[in-house]
Length: 550
Image 1 (cartoon, rainbow, N blue to C red):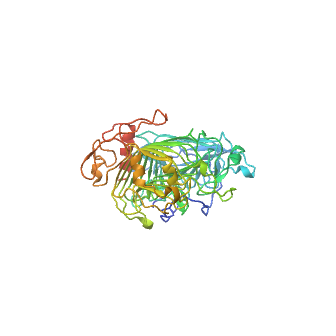
Image 2: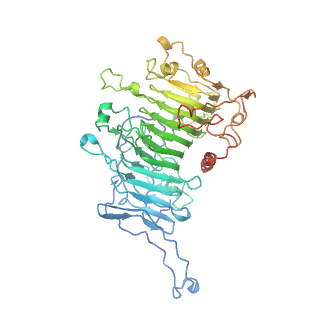
Image 3: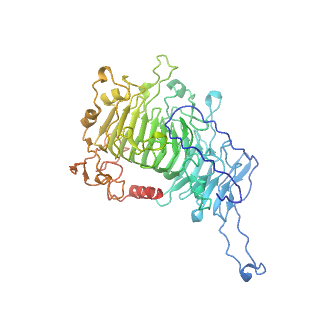
């Protein structure tokens, strides 16, 4: 890898561990920090020649465009990136940002000309991370990181990531033709021989003040909710379901993620993030773990594309109660499930040992497509099973389209996985039978529709039949798999206007309308994430997202 003259950093190659969510802390060895104040100016230009310089017989080279790098002032000192005019980038040393430094001042990362990037040698932590149980106080009016449309931000090491603390904000608002891109330094190092890879950097993590089942209501109301985030330890949770952590819109996250099994950084991690936060038009590609993982909170997500990421497309846990619409998960090379969902986990410290299972995750999701082939992948996983629901979870699911060519176990379109909740009264099978897990106006075009029950059902659930349950939902259909072309348009991702089943019969398609009961949702006339021939900002975003994977 060819590094600029400002620093040389070796990219650490992390092992591709494809795993789900869990507890524990990563033992990350912090990078040695240069704590000297970086007061350098970004007004760096190449020297120009003169008549006496001897350059081309006295010809003066054209001036190099000066780059304006990000800067901020904190504790009376100014910190500013250095302009690398030769490579059109701005370079930020660990004096500017590192995993040992909470930045408490607001600042702007400006757009650079000619496709330049802002290169960070350390982690970028915005706002002070606070554990209130140790006497700390959260600054609810913390700093804001603002990023202009068209900005490229890159990191040099797997353990470096963006973290927005409780009370801080991020305003990253791109445009469909000028997205904000977070990626690996290997994309911007000027060396065609280097290639960006999964796990090159850590990802984006937002810690909010929303609810989490990890905290009791008493602690949350007293300001004592301090649950540890995965990755380098930080804290999230509170009692404000409308908490606003800012905006991510028209954002691309590539080659992110880092960690060990059960304790990973994802492309985008949303920890107890409130509904005041906007997450819209997000593309995550080639992530180490999940594309987006939500731990509690009530944030809504929309217009999401996840392509070939190491584990699940969308994963939720700890009582997430938001909404989601227009979601595409494409997993033909990497990936475990399009969706993996957890409701709650038993709290052994609670009086009855059952924990907070009454506050389980219960989102509503509409217009999602999961496309997969179920081939054997790393760690024995099959790429792109449709959806796995487990651990007391609940959900309302409408206009879903799962397309999977595999007939192998482990790659089925849907799984009620009851290893932990078994036949309990709040388990996934009990929730399905009670109408707390529902599909409506959804189509499975799969070689294998349903996975076998993990733990045999007993008692009132002994006669539960998952196929009968699914088909009893309004307008749900099992059409089998013959070809991706039966269901998907020529672009390979949008829903055909005329769908045929495995026998070539036309399938009548009717979508559910949710707007009357929930104003978040937009009513559309199709099942899945995107309609064939649709011309919209969303269709342009999907097309651009798929093009990035080529």
